[in-house]
Image 1: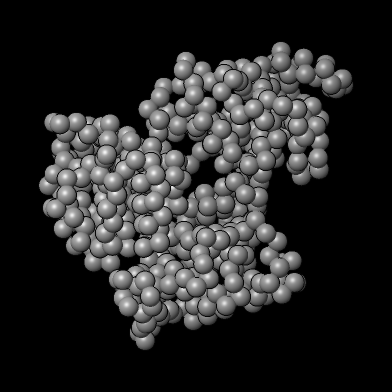
Image 2: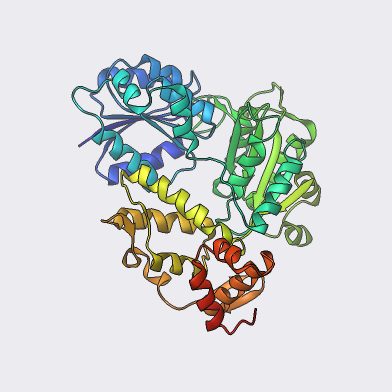
Length: 452
């Protein structure tokens, strides 16, 4: 049974991860500090180490440098910056995962680390095999969050808004359906802002019990409440100088809203159990798939906090309203899945492309990524075929878009009309926009009796 050491000061998260890995056949040891982690490394024969990059006594990179044995180290970080990941991997880390990560993601990363750990492998050799230069490593990490060039009108409008607001310090409220990439949009704002050298900290307000929200926001001192076994840096302090992203901010309790509002007004925080005030300089970007204005009207969300968060608002478009970007997303997720699963799938066959273009994508971009990852896992040849797609994608369904509910055929007809209008009825350009051949477009135009 492979033995894993988890070094993580967030006790609840560490215990949850321990239970999951134990159920999947791993022997798991927990440590809450780097010093205790070093002790466990000396006392046990370990197969993999999972460590947070931000620990109460010192950071994860310091720990990586102290490890003499050839144990693969996977760093976990909410500080999802290329520079941080590059530094960790330069020092010998096997890989990194950004919080929040999915169970499948961490399991796949651990299994890859175990497969790659041979008897002659050491940290230096592992690092040399991973990359040959800092530039190559940066490119490798960048593939996880690279800026893609989109072509849809909805994406162009979103990018215009990002370019407009990024250089300012305005608080931004991002709205949109689940799975449309609100956190990606927030990261894009941060990466093109004057704060891009400082941390980007993401906090999922929907996953925090209201009793622990103050600790997550502001941190705490050891012993300040039951379970506070060590000092903890809160998200405001961690994001100092950079950007704090509050996802699903509408889920905060009324009491937590008051605490957040006070911190935004005063730009000062106190850790729980401390009387010392800490000045913080953070930019707030928040996101929600709820109607906060309606929540304000119903008394569930404070109006003064709403206006603090909503100095500038933008909406991330649903995938069905940016279908011209479908092939860009698909090829990117195909490349990402190949890396993650050690596969070499080259493309999707024509039938799969047709299914992708007529499917209604209720889960948006997140669903597309999950579908492609599953398909790559199941694919045995060099192209994804329709038999590896989820069964519900192959059945007739309706499409929900900004124009209301429509059948798949109505949706396809609508996409053709949009493409033709956008290209001033140039069929060659429209076919290119729809990622189909000119002949296919003519056939579909005839099928729908479109008189152009």
